[in-house]
Length: 291
Image (cartoon, rainbow, N blue to C red; front, side):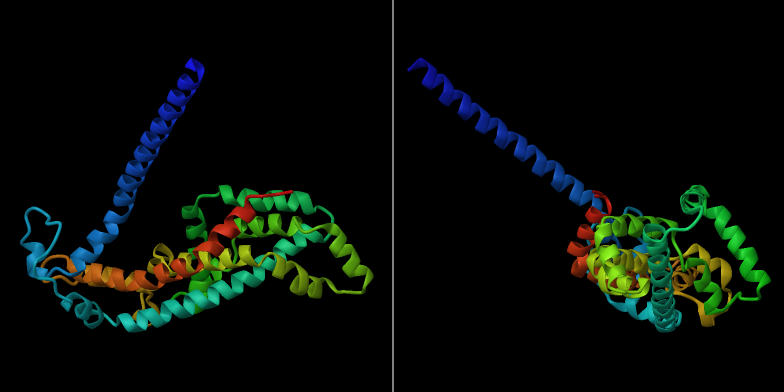
């Protein structure tokens, strides 16, 4: 009897410890969620404050009793934000499409084709990831300038049409496909391009979707390169527009209008992530698994 009672007490104590641990985990997750989401709340809150109310606050207020949507109108009236949106869409779609072609063909070559020096070449290729972005930007700026492509969409797009990381990620996925499928396809007389389009791409679709989404986000958020290579408003992206709005305050920075523009610009990316979040997770987890 004593052993049974002791066992029940141990079980009860374990359940209590489990509940306490679960409660602590939930509390920590809530705290972490508040920390992560607070910048978004602050961004939306600031966008709803009037220019005068925001600049009169000596102590930042965590809420507003008189929200206004005037900042959203100012964001589009201060600068041609609609045109910057269309420029960004063109830049994003063309860059992503070209990059997809480049990385798919490159990953296929490194994963399936046999040629002399392939491993050495791929190792050298991976070593490019160690070069700081600042050095690459300087080199790209000199190249684009010497080619006379400043203030053109081509100058904006060309430096972003490839990615060593995405090629590596896709190559690892392609290598998970059994070699027997490739050999059987070759016996049937299937060309490499047809095998790539009919077999490899459908199998690796989750990873490709992930790469496309990440590239879209990267292009949409691009700031340094567009600011560096363009000074003609006809080729400005939304990142240029945000900076213009910020500097257009009446003697002070117009932060509320800038925040309104940031909210508008962020909405498409948030919707994109919410729609494809499961595919992103599946693609990343597949890319991190081999064998």
